[in-house]
Each structure stands twice: as structure tokens, then as C-alpha cells.
Amino acid sequence: MALITNFSYNSIVNNLDIIKRQDISEDFFCKNIYDNPTLYSIFNKLYLRKIYINAYILRNDFEPKYFKKVPIKEDKYTHVFSRGGKPTYHIYEDCQSLNNSYRDFVVPFIDPKRELTLNEVKLVKEFRNWFIYKDFRYKLESKNVKMDDIVFDYNNYFAKKHNLKTLPLDYTFKTNITNSGFIGIQSSFDVNSFKNEIEDILYASDIMCQDENLLKMRNFDWMRKLPKEELLARLYQIFDKNFIDNYGEVNIRDFMNKHYKLRESAFKKTINYLKWTYGLKNKSFNEVNLEHFGFKLCSFCETQSIAI
Image (cartoon, rainbow, N blue to C red; front, side, top):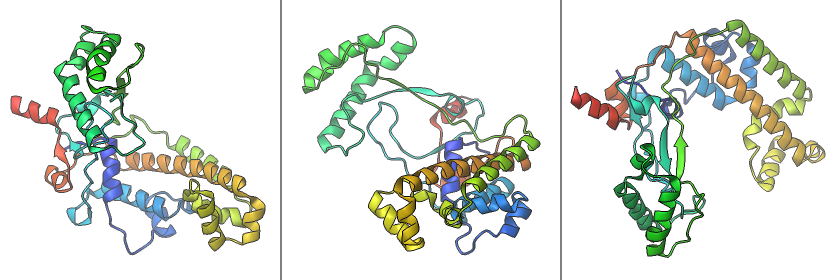
């Protein structure tokens, strides 16, 4: 059986489609998720769908007929080693890629906020090849070179060759990519603490939503980052215009941001409760199913498998 990271698990949750035609009722939530109608009411349809899918996977495992392929991650050309591609699964718990964060190196002449030209993409590929050919990652880890040695090499060879801006000697290429870890549960779970934390969140939500309009508005906190014109246009369709104008954009955004944080906290705690409730240790998945869904075997696990 296969293991996946929390990041890949969330990709599965986002691509599993098993409740197209029906909403999750309060009765279902209280019987199968957590017996608290007020907690149910704090979640909108999107959150309820994610909670249901988590419960479904944790209780049953998933089936191919419900699953859309996880999209291949696009290469952003911002790092030397991170190049996008298919999500991976693992077959060994001690796989270094599954358990460890890893070090990558930024491409210094790329602006990640804009789309690259074909010539810039070609230049990134050349930079990657040069960086790997020079074996800078291994040399740094083994302390055969320092970061300023790499900067010096870059300025006097690569930047000079391609007429790029040179870098200050204190520049660092290094960036640590934190591994999300494989899906599991806490070694212990305090149910009473969970209940108290949920009650605190619900109390804070209740205090914020004394007004009938605000109680309704909490379901639309996903609008919090919309441009002003679009935000107001959408709200005018849902609420009385006088209420929106009197409450004001600043107060609306402040309310939405604060309630979003409450909802997110309640959601994460509920998911952790589900993981503990269903006795999840290390969730295993069928390898054939994962490959059908667009995953591939981790290269480290594949190498270890061949060596055995």
C-alpha cells in the first residue's frame, strides 16, 4: 500500500466529487461528523463538502469513479530542482522525500509575478543545467564551497555571459522547502480540549453575528478579497443596499476576515477530530488507484525498491 503527504492528501480531497446533487444536512452532520448543530451552522457548503469527503476517505477509502485526475503541477521556473510534474506517492515510511524538508535554490533573474518569455524559459533551463553541472548543492552540503563562492561564480560567468545584473555577495540562492509530512494523527488527542476549543469558536462567532445581516454575511466570507466594485455589486444582490452602505466596505472586510479565521480554525480542528475518531494511524492508499488518479511513484522509493 502507498503513503502520501498531507499536501497530496488535500489534492485528493479537492478532486473527489461524491456529493454533486445533495447538500449535507444538519441531521447527517450530527450523526456522522460531530453532534453539534451550531458547529454545522458555521460552515458553508464548500466547507461541509470538504468535511464530508474527509470523513468518506478516512472511513472507506475512495473509488476511481468519484475521482478527477489531480492536475500536473506547472513548472514555474523559479527554482533549480522544483519543476512541477505529477504528484507522488511513497511505498516506504522512511523515504527521505516523505519525511524530510529539502533544500532548493532560486533562479535569481526571474520575476515570479509575470509570465516568462520563451527566451527566459530557455535561459532558466541553461541556468539549471549550469548549477547542476557545477554540483553546487552537494558542495554546499559537504561544505566544499560557501554561498558567496557560488555568487562569485554566477557573477563572473553566468551573469556576464548573458548580460544579467550581478548579485551582491551576501545574496543567497538557498531556500528550504518544508515537507508537509505524511498523513497521520497526533500521538494523543484531548477530546475535552477539542470540545472546549470548538465552544470558544462558536461563542466568538455568536458574539460577532448578533445582527441578522451579519449572521447571513458570515457565509460569504469567501468574498473578502474581491475588488471593491465586485464585492459591493455581489453584496447588493444579497443584502439591502442601505445596510451595505451604512456598514461600509472597511467594516465588511474586517468582519469577513475575522470570521474566516474562526471558520478555518473550526474546520481544521474538526478534521483532526475525524482523523482521531476513525483511528487513523498512517493512511494507506491503493497504488493502482493513485496512478489512475495521476500520481507517480516517488523516485527515491523507486530507487530503494530496485536496490532491495
